[in-house]
Length: 545
Image (cartoon, rainbow, N blue to C red; front, side):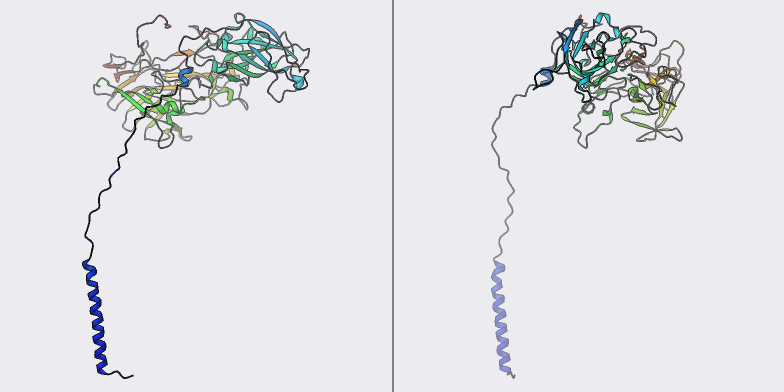
């Protein structure tokens, strides 16, 4: 195809004309750009409120149930005898009579709950007797002793459901005595020689309804009505409200519930006199709500000598023992459940300098270390005169060279006639298995006094300056080698018979701190801090002295 030169000129003019028109049309768009407007800040809208009267707090059920006046005097059941008929009824719709109260006794008798009890073992008639408290041993004066026997001419032993109503005497003692009640079957010799080894009772698997004031258990009934089965209503060391055993070690010392524990802690520091160049005790009354929350019914829940949730203790090493009642069988030489403590393992727990933790023993070298080791040197030593069978005590040397002694008792420089720190607290401990401390041929002789707590009593800094802690423990009576169902017969005597109720320390320093200088521990001390617990008000006539 041939295109002429004139045609090329026409196409060039047309293209130039189209480009010019396009550029001319774009100019107005640029000139029409919007003017910048700054953003307005966001404004909160006010909402008008309405005053609302607060609701009244609901009544505190604990306050409503609390006793506000003097406890009612206990009414012990009088000696009496009555018979109960448990034979099947003639009504075909019901074969059992239900609970039967013999006479006016505070007792109900019924068919046993145990499914192992057949019809032949349930007595048709039962004779129930409440023994005169004036004629039972002193060991059972803090309860009631019953006698149950068959009167249906059957010569085989039987089984009944025994329920005892203790509402009349539930206020006889304190420390949640009613919650610690239990039923114990006693041998006949318990009425004449209650302290004898073979005259100890066997606790029954009982149900204690504290709110209703009754305690029940399936109870064996002797075939003879004259001899009968002796059953004692007596207290034990523990109940559903707490444990009153010797040790006060609580699991709540390491208790926590995640990152947000909800704990409330409070500390009140006490100003100490300035030191003459030696160590100065750091004394503060510390409160922790979680230390209370971490306690439960299976642990010893006695509060400290300051109060519930409060603590002040310079430091201690503590050892745990196991209940002899849970350490039977195998090569154990105990065959009767008692309330004693038996050797378990060679263990220790340290509570000191604001931290607590388990001590771990190297089985090869015998060296002790904190589970969370901070470099402290921990030594278990022997030879102290502190009441422990071989004079065990502990020495902790921290990384800065300061030495801390636990359970030394006779402070360095002690001489005859001088006071001792009373820093080691002991309890009779039985070695009932082969290889355990104090093991003998028979269980009654297989015990010795073992320390369960060694308190901090002596501090020596790197310059030889010293600080010592002194304690005045409370004391109580410990019924050694006796079943927990047979209370100590001399619980109130000032000088218990030898071997019957050995005295053991309980808790609470009332003279905790005395500072001295090394080498002159018995010389006049430059500073002394004395903690005591006087009455908040004047002497009252209604307070026991």
